[in-house]
Length: 333
Image (cartoon, rainbow, N blue to C red; front, side, top):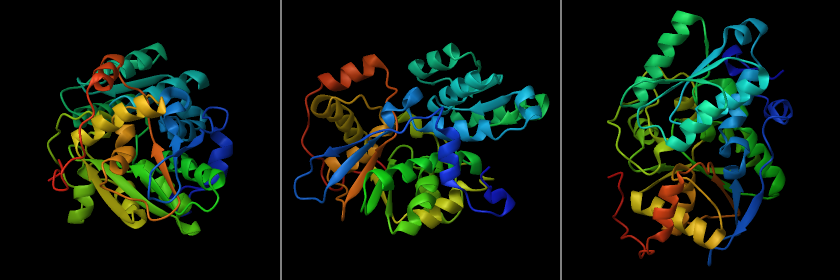
């Protein structure tokens, strides 16, 4: 089995990929036409089993549990995608799962969590409330926590995206990745850094706790704001053990996109590419299509999820496209 950095060893992404293959698919890459920029492709984790990359980390974590941990069950805090992944993987492996969610959890993701057989605990108005509730249940009931990003087994699983990208796109020079708690960016960055691949992290302006934390040199807390990229919402925790430091090591450049950029990207992905992409999964596309970032070399854009409420997708797809925003129009301030 792969060694964990908790024990002083580097993640083994090749072993993780072999381990999770029966539970997580290899997702395709497709070309994206961008005039005047180097060849660019989209890595479609939106077509992943469970509809997002989160199944990779959840599978790696749960498959590495001991018999006693499996018997007691697991608990996770989630705004939706991680909870769905934990619920479905746990169901496949015969493990009892509890998922703590904020009150504003996406109804599509909530229905999927319930359908997978997990117990759902509504925990309060913010993601941080869900994390606190999950920690309480873990301590009281002996449940094993499955953290959505600050866990080396989860980070190791997410890094398999990077391993697939460098194999599918020989000569890739940079990868553009959504940034929230940092598990995906950290995993991909660790997996590709020795191959000379640049990592560009993209935050939603209204969900930029990790970006602000890196700027200030320590984890910070910010008020939660409503955003169409709800999958990226939430804090990174004042006691963050892994993802903060790793993101500081692997991120070469950071880009922030606004709500208008994201909505336009969801709409454009649907209209022009026939892709169903949720707001949090579309931030990389938003960075490119808005002109806030231009690839410097052969690039891969990770579209991290496609679990969007149908009514919201219809609303966004029906809106008229607007012109590119002014260069100063960043919602992150």
